[in-house]
Image 1: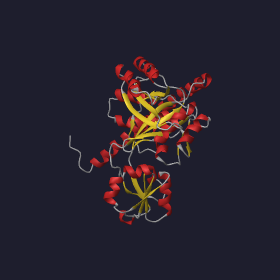
Image 2: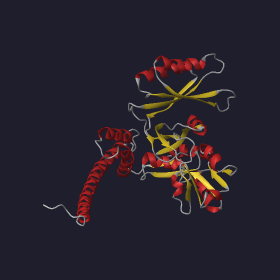
Image 3: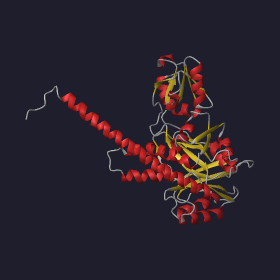
Image 4: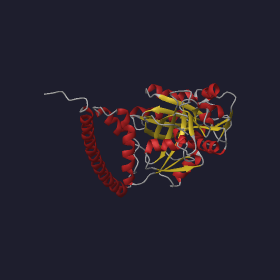
Length: 377
């Protein structure tokens, strides 16, 4: 039997490609059939939830689902691709239970908007509001089921406005989102040399300060209310570049002059999800507490913290904020690993409460998984 001639090989390769594409088409139809099977099951879940008054959103559900799939994945489908794929699958089928309205710090296109998309998918109804306080108010008034607010950034630290509103609000925390920030410089200009001003929200400007100092020394920096406002300025005026997420690069008329200009590769912003039902223990939780301690009682703060050490409860963060109307007195925010219903946490909290003037649990919620997406605030 003779070997195939070189002239025959392109035909054989073409035939094999066609067979493979036909097989892939069949697999895609099978995936579609399976998605619709999942959708029918979720629709039935929605009927049961509506009848019982149960919430549509369950904070730990998507995280645990993806982690279980990662552990079970034999490959070759990349495990890192499971999260974005199943985020949209969960989001799309969740809409059959009921559309989830989510308030966030607007306008549309900001990093907070991206955090909503990263957590709840494209089918969530994202509702932009003017301030962090308005996010809480929208949930409290029933205008949104959930809210998403920034609380901390690895470069710039805590978002004090969020802590201050938390102290006044009765809306519980039900989850968190960790979003990896990647900042891009976008403009109508064709070249970096044509940029005369750089605009953005103060946080992105600070997070790209080193890059801007090196590549655009002496160029004026303009603070705006949001990255979306910076993009609008870049569209209106010649020589203006905006710093923001990759979403800004999708704005018609703007192009990316420089991608990934953030100074720290680990730059991440953490968001809290507020509203909904208090989550049950998931096995990987955080709890945020708010305490007041007497300023005239020596050792009061030590007595407040000591029970957590004794019960081996790890405190992940301690923040203080001025107490409204009380000069030189402070609110103390303690975040710890564990759920308020965990035995060691409950015992430590009970003893700490005796050492405090007041105590509130702001929320026990599942720890968020880091997203590989685009930004924050």
